[in-house]
Image (cartoon, rainbow, N blue to C red; front, side, top):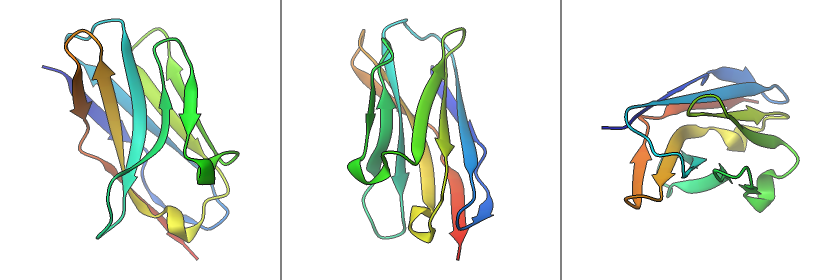
Length: 117
């Protein structure tokens, strides 16, 4: 059983920064991608950024230059550095892990990010 635990969500003023963390536990095969998604009330869950097991990154176009995804090669963990935050970045941020072996998506419970104006 794979579990993902996010942390780092908080209330921050516009223009501020936050760093989200996600740690995975359980039996995880080496070939896995990780990503961050976010969801605002009444809206669909959207991709924020992803990083493959080879380190290739992808970002939502609107977030390029402000957000940076990274992963720890020594453990199964992914991070999201968020700078110059805007009120529209307010959402629940979810960590995602995809394993190639069994083609399964795993999700964390989410962490709330609130950006005040």
